[in-house]
Length: 395
Picture 1 (tube, rainbow, N blue to C red):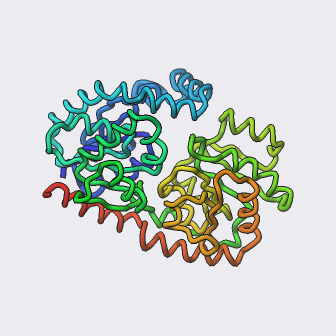
Picture 2: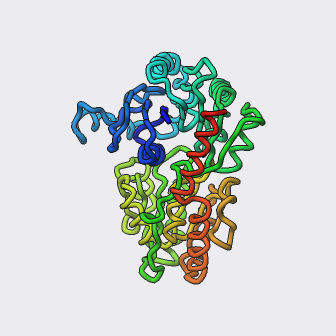
């Protein structure tokens, strides 16, 4: 099949899915809303910035770590993540008409069998505006906060979300909850949908467990700085944990150099117990999950986080925010713990209980590995995705 992805070409989630489609032998094209340089062969790559994507990502004509990249990084550090999200929600839609004209030209030249927009804001919105005729088929993926954070943020975002779902011929979500929410936002009941991990599934050879006795009292936060991640709760819980388990250490991925994280560490006087790490490659993440005893995924808006599935595959005990989507994977007290996203004492209690219960961590690790192999293994999930693509093509 000839597939055209409309996606953030920097995103590990999108790239994992797209890479696997390349390996399956499809003719794969990418229209990226951010400048990017994927490290695997594509039939074509078009950069179509949307929602200010032109000020982020890598450009082909610049050196990694060069002055342009440093300026963009400094700009992102100066503007808090909440303000960046607000700006994209209110001003991002203004960028769509121009981007849609460019995407329409790409579609007309390529004539793909399927256009796959990977998340609604702003890739699904862009594809819906560009595709004015029934062909090609449009598949839209929903990522965890499309309906709960972005769609209700203002009337414009709500209207664009409905427009994308009304144009979509098929829907991929990473949790069953979002299939239900999609119907409320305009996705017709008779149209097909599928629930699969957002990145296509977990490579269980890479994300494999290590013996629990080899693990240290490490607590890993892999979620980085995002507007919907309750890192304030996470950092406030750290002194409460250290008061009872002083040897505990906290690893925070994607927070190196982040001004807000540095302020929390300084204000709470926890520098000796916290490492703020840069973003990690998949192999590095797998190693961190194998070293840590506990993973924290504390959010107010989420679907099924790919980092959480990777942690489960590696036998890392999950402590997560108590939201509907995560109850599709975690039964509290059985294979993990769920806690209110805004309650530091409750989080600290859950972390201490996990650190102090090796038998519970072992039981959870065994159950969670089975869950991943049954419901999230990469080859199994992508075979289902392949069948779904073919059903859309010939529908």
